Image (tube, rainbow, N blue to C red; front, side, top):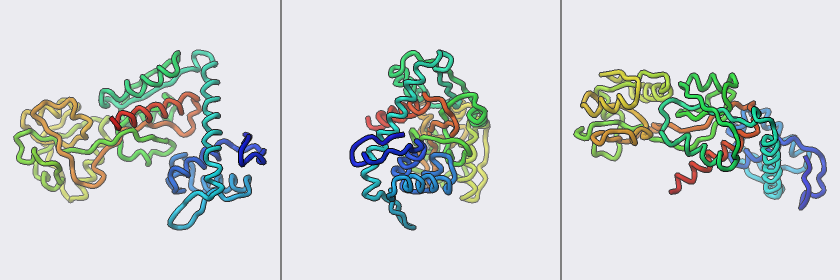
Length: 314
């Protein structure tokens, strides 16, 4: 890898592209442990990569102390060149992918059953229009199926709803959107007109529970929140689909805890009131295996992220 011009014209040694990618990640996170998790390496290995890059250049890239990590003047000078180098490398990977045999110009995409309806079309539309003749193959799975499928290379990436993506060993993630966890109530419920509700206020209610592995992450989260408040929710009914849960709330058979992602399919007589508890939310994310080498994958993830950011600004 050659750094070709400008203030770094003097530098001509080859540099591992991974070290430059790690440098860029650290400029975004400004935290060694967070940056190391993002690129799926140990903190010691990540620190070693940065140290090797600084050794190659003969200059420090970051000021470090116990409270803050920030770019040095040399680091600020190098930053635009680092972005250019990594960008050109990714463009080369993409061009190389486009001239491969057809069977190698494909992307395999997993998704959680019952994701919000516009998630996959929105992410895919921009990618297909930009890259044309590429095969996209889709796989619907439970959360366990998604994690297994990624680790066993059944597909390249997957869309799912979780609140603990950082805990999935060997996987990376990009957060696309956050949905608050809500109390789902009939419009006649005494708390239905509130702007928010504490979980403690509904602890004695009868709850409708989704008994479906696709919603395992949400079930764990609800259980954790209830445990923190010291109560066991009283289960009135169990269902397997969100649509059934919303129908039972409409019929006055109990209340439920579901993210606002389901609000678009709710009957008019059902209202969603956000919970006040800290971390009472779930994130729409794209997951992929750290070791995945499909050259189409980085551009697809960027495309998905940019599209969701654009929608959030509307």
